[in-house]
Length: 332
Image (tube, rainbow, N blue to C red; front, side, top):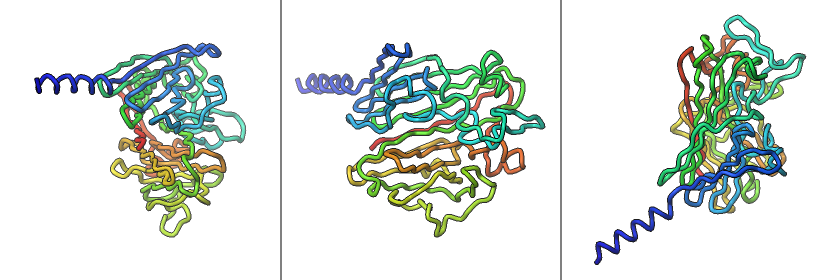
């Protein structure tokens, strides 16, 4: 009898933690909305809106700034936009690579936040297991699309979102299956994180090695020592009066950035694969902030063209190959 009781209890536990995936069609936009649930962690993913994870809730608490309506989700205003193939700014809206110039924007203005944050990804696969739920969305770059004309390497870019209890993970894949050339790229994620509690009691820790000197948010190539700098967050620092829209360099997988909301007992840890060597910290005077893991510097293509790829960390995917990496947020 005792054995039977234990078996029944075990089955009940498995059922209670099983993941769930639901899909609905938004009446206003016609987009499919995927809700991934694992335990008390729920993420809302909209592939057609730039592969944006609109919402992450943990124990009923929302962590991302929300759009007024779903039609406003594409772009870089809320949720967790994906920045590819040029994270953040591109100086003058153009860059050179292997002797050829590529123009995203004519004129003197900078291009910003890549080419995919408003693109319509399609759902490629999904799966529910006993401890996780995932959805993979894909986007094709080719001459039939404007993005394929601006960034003329024919290939597929994928984002896989996985929800486990207490965490959400973004895997990217660059599949250079058809361009026949080296593909230069960067990937970043731009979360609009809501302050939980007060800004004064929000503490950031970012174990970076240096700060990239910049002019109008464009790195110059010079590195600044963090010792004594107002933006030194190698030890936890309050975000009260912490004003940043800057690029930190020297992030390593073993030392993730961490955001603590001490007055409400919550935190977010920003784990990432070895590809993510840079971090942008953005702290506007608004009820949200950005802790942006990047595989490269802002304006990486131009820095690399100037012979500074050691600090630019521009990623290359040779023809016929794939490149992958991941970012994971732990909600505690």
